[in-house]
Image 1 (cartoon, rainbow, N blue to C red):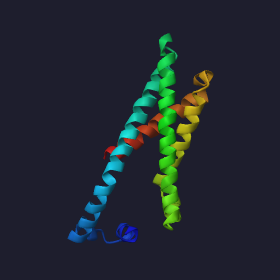
Image 2: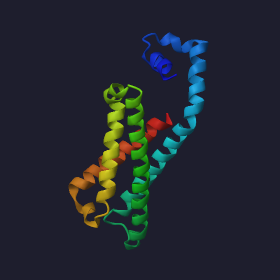
Image 3: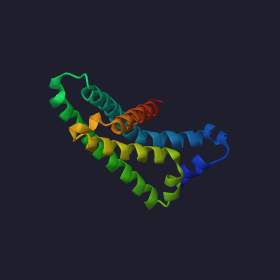
Length: 158
């Protein structure tokens, strides 16, 4: 039951996590969550690799043959972004349906994920215009986004 998990996570006494019952509940729930956590980690890895490739292909010293691969990386970026958007909206809906909407809004991690998601969509859509890579503001935003993607990926690997 979700209420039990919420009660455990809100418990001020961290010794509760050392009890056999709590460890069994967390272990049981983790077995169900592990495939999704692995999927999110793989997705984050693909995003990082893809944005690193985009960074290479949009470099002003890149060879002229990079046009084809750049289109592919933009397609992958938009595809992964669409899937990530679906997952985030599903998560928001899940929080709201279970009466935990305030909990979602109160979490800096969720705000960070949502901000990175919006930035990813904006950068991916902006890349459809080839001239945008010459804009200083775009390049700065792209650099910040790549940094944020790396940060999220490293958090998933912990």
